[in-house]
Image 1: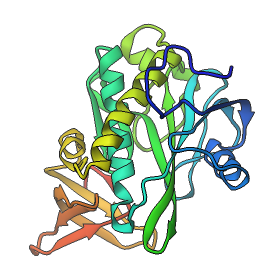
Image 2: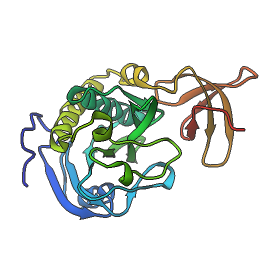
Image 3: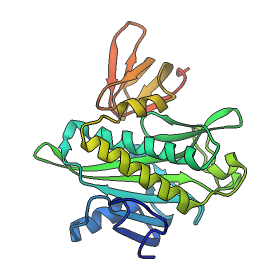
Image 4: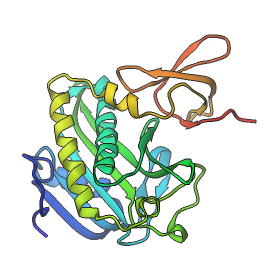
Length: 262
């Protein structure tokens, strides 16, 4: 497949690669970008990942032909402190696209988990992984990987701390993966262009966050634990947690649960 059928974008997804099986779409797209001068908006899609990656070194696992698994190459050339904008605008684009083609209620769990409300709970149906390249203090290249449980059965869902689900289970019918992909890429292009025009994605992203105004436990990679109220996020996407002593902690990367540790 040389082109994405039905895609109406100016550049995101117009350069398109497909591999039926791969280790990681992020790894593949990074390797291709060192071999070729790929344009802004290049997309690499697969039907099955054998070594998919999540945040903090986790694996992303999905049965073949059940999920939407792809990566997008962006060349924003933003100041390094704006790298978080890529995650913000992509996560927001994904939730908007899901809402556009389903009747599902969508949200984001800070910073990059895609959530839908199903069976009385907020459940995870996907996630994002950003890997960027900096040069002279600027984000020259960003590869954002997206994985979504689209048509997975209950038996195919992975074990996870955050309760998982798939779009088809919540919707009660099979979802077109290509229709969803086209909607995501179209919305992503609109939001990316707005960000290129200095319009911050933070307001739309923060509005989708179910983490805000919740008591949370945040555990950093180094093992530091912060417990308190998630008040808001700053312009760079850091979660602002106020502890019981009144100290405000900006958290750039951590595991966050919507409950206190016992």
